[in-house]
Length: 63
Image 1: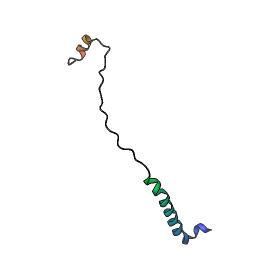
Image 2: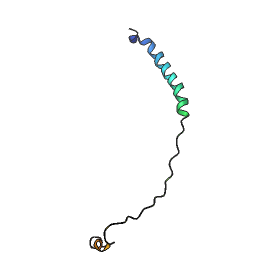
Image 3: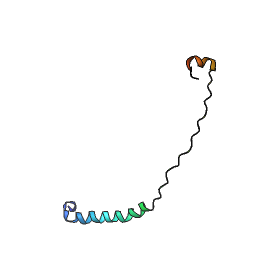
């Protein structure tokens, strides 16, 4: 069985690593990374409450 013959393992592993390195290095180096997004100013919208303000003053005295 040729799998048990360990004399060729080093050459096989070395050739596979060299091939993958030469094939993947240009592919990875050509990848364009997107720039970080710029923070957008957030605008808070006023929430319109359906409750009457006379009733909410009982529960929310600071309103």
